[in-house]
Length: 252
Ligand code: 13P
Image (cartoon, rainbow, N blue to C red; front, side, top):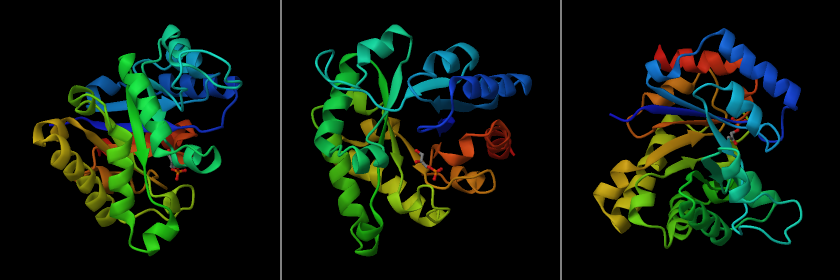
């Protein structure tokens, strides 16, 4: 059976001082994640990555983004070798805020995933439809395109170790979480799309997370579902008490 995954995406929140306070609060609660059969991760800002690496115990640290080139004239960007050097081994790719505000496309996400594969680094590839697409009943066609285009040219081995997060844009930070039925249906659909293209064995290794207004009081409902392997959480991952409550509720 797969272990459940809980990853907090801090987005553009927390100074270094606040990140230290968070890491210390987790330590004080002596969260023994390994024992609990839950994989825990945090995606902090680039600046806070070394802090979470150092103080976060067995928390996996994720970058929130990478550039696909190794180096060069790309002002304001951070490359994979830079992250590798500080021990970061995974990154979010294609979060809807990156797609919306920074014009990332399935094609640029694909370049980033290929670059991560080249460096043996894992990814959480984010997909999800907008409210308009949801209302026009286009969810599955949008998701299929995001998955197939994003994964184009990756090895089957890499795909079989990939994590994909289904985050409907209309549910992010809005308090309007997708029902468990919708989340379950789309998470299963993502695996089916991969199985159709790459076969059941490859698809069976993929982890699929749900994200969008996940909170301590609803996380268990999602994670109890057989098609949802974990959660990618924004707002509710910012306070250590709420992060800890989610861990406790998953166990519960
Ligand atoms: P919220 O949990 O704040 O809705 O954000 C979800 C998200 O974007 C995680 O990547």
